[in-house]
Image (cartoon, rainbow, N blue to C red; front, side, top):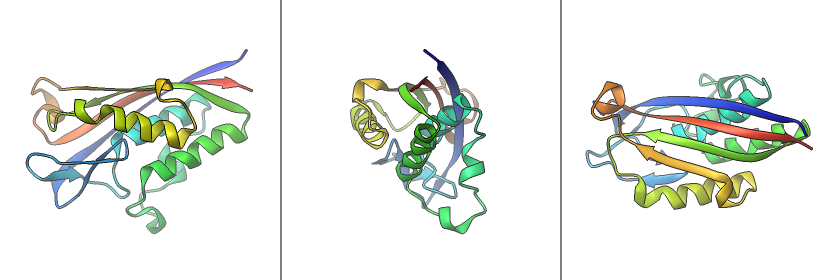
Length: 161
């Protein structure tokens, strides 16, 4: 049995007048902030995509969805995730599981975790128990702690065949 592990990371700045989308879920930030980016800036889904691509040495999401390409402006990251999963499958691999941790001071993510897992699992054709989503704060340290942005770390395990 062949296995591959990949890791991914993403961070986006919090700004006014943008939606806050994490794991495909529209959330309310207490200060009305959202994530800035060319697509919907869903750092959770972006980190998972990079983990999947990294496991097969396929580059990163910028290679497939460049931020200067107008066709990806405002793109739904869950749709992009489906395309990345298709790339993995075209090469004869399947996703065993993904795990992630979102780093954000606010909003509280716990009430949304199950919906995030379900949305991601559905787009990856996985069971929800194959998708790990955790949330933590940065204890007021760094960019996330100062609420300048939200980041996410993710890992993916792939199996050949």
